[in-house]
Image (cartoon, rainbow, N blue to C red; front, top):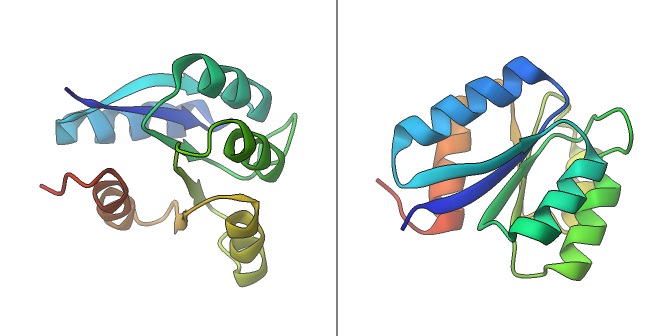
Length: 123
C-alpha cells in the first residue's frame, strides 16, 4: 500500500511539480494538494495522511499555525516543511511548532531523502 502524502503550498506550479516528483518515485501517493494553511488543516483531519509536506509562506495563515493545530489533533502525522525561506530561527520555530524536518525548495534530492527517512521506505 502506497504511503499517502498531503501537499500544502500556495504556488500551483510547486504543487504540481512536487506531486509529480513524489508519485514518480513509486510507493507514495499524493492524497491531496492544497493551496492554503486552512485547507491543509481540513484535509489533514479528513484524510489522516502518512505525511504532510507544507510550505511556510501561505496567504491565509503562515505554516506555523496549521503545524501547531495538526500536531495537536493528529500527533502521529509527521510534517515536513518544504520552503524557500530556510533560516535558522524559522527552522527552529517550525520544529517547536511540531515539524520534524525543514528542507529548502532548492534541493529536490534532499526532500526525497527526508521523505524516505520519515516514511521508512528508502529506495
